[in-house]
Amino acid sequence: MPNDISPRDPGRFGLESFAQVLPERDPITGEDPGSFDGFHEGMMRSLAPLTPYECVIAENLVAIEWELLQHRRMRDACLRQTIRGAIRDAVVAQRKAAHEDALDVAWDRFIEDGGDEDDWEEPVTFDGEAAERAGDDLATRAISHDRDVQATAYAEIAELGQDPVEVMSAAYRDFPSPAKRHDAQILDLERRRRDVKRDYDALQAARPLDGAVIEG
Image (cartoon, rainbow, N blue to C red):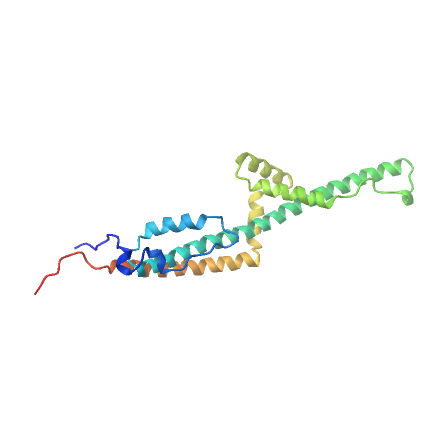
């Protein structure tokens, strides 16, 4: 006979809802507001626990899946920060080089006009803060959800003498320590997910059979 997969009544276990078997989860700063609730609801519908204990194990699975997502988000944030720094440095270097070239031209003109070295003053100073802001702006546009904006940013990065793919490759190669820790956590969580899912599947497979008792 097939296993009985009809929903259990929480009232049979002295509960108004199976959600009462676990404490309410508080949000964590950095999560998308309200995102966990929708994620939790969808996962629990998919796992379909029918008893309080199944609910506990299902909650463990949901927690692991959610933590996996958050570690991937944090790892990706580390990568984006590394890439942002590389793009900003490239913009600053380009603008500084352009500034130096302009100074060379101004110096040559100054000397040609009979100027004395002791009287030389730089006509303009390099604005490093403005260059950094421009670099941050380019890095922000490079991850825009607007494809046209992103494509334009990629073209500007190429004009800096950098291939966007190579910039990303360098970020992975020089993986910052926090990102490596997230990667290690992801591997551990994936192992835990397999173990808990195996236990959950076994628990569901052991549900009582739906059938009449045969008296001997």
